[in-house]
Image (tube, rainbow, N blue to C red; front, side, top):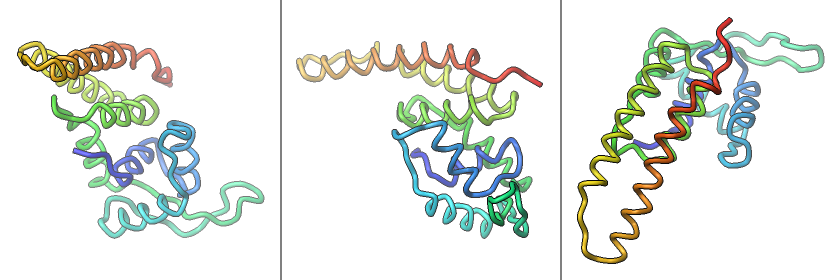
Length: 172
């Protein structure tokens, strides 16, 4: 399963209403240059999610003096369900970079229950990935080298996942 910007936007809306500009700014703050997206892509994603009834967009309001009028986006109940389902839908074949993206979003925006489910599912999937890699036997030197690399990546991923709770904001 690959990460789609629409799913990222749904997670970023978990804390409450935001404008497309605010979503773009938060995305940039979380991922920096490593996953830079244009504001226009965020706006297209918001439109697609609104048409799918996963979020609603309200009339423009002035959020700050001098900021102009911005549309506020809110998650619908269906959007909130999809957001939690997507964030927690991880398995041993989920790509490492997909787990990284979900983990970064979960640390920043997921509610406590969704974060805990994401973490439990991700750790279980990573343990299964590690056990599958340990059971793999290949005679070819290049395959052994790739296997050794994959094992180290999986162990590093497990370590990182175990450290994620330390990076959450304290509960209010």
